[in-house]
Amino acid sequence: MREIGERLVCESGSPSRLVATVVTPGLLARGQRAGDRRAVELSLTRAGTSAARDVAVAERRLHDWLSGTLSAREPEAMVKTLRKLVADRPAGAAVARRRAEA
Image (tube, rainbow, N blue to C red; front, side, top):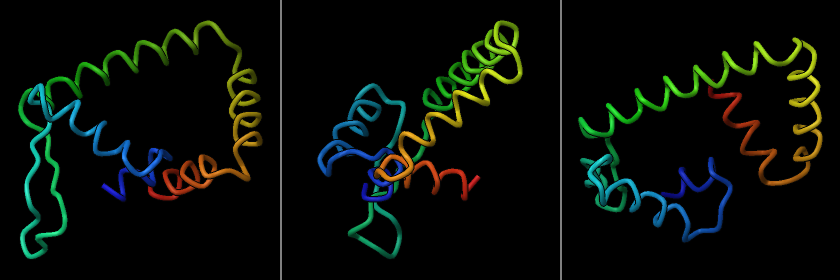
């Protein structure tokens, strides 16, 4: 949960609540990690995998629409501006971690 919270940049209780919102409808399964009872292991269920595919399709459609609507320079300028706004904040650190992991 701590790792999720670091990536989401939210207060300590929020990751648990957010995870519960996808565990309850059966999109995510929660269990214990082998060899470490303190750790929680999360895995996608079949329904979660299907939902992730649907999200990927919607994301692709959004990206296609954006690329057809905006010039090549406009998204680059927006991303640069947004990164500048969060650079010295916890959100900026989380974005930097995500980019390093990608």
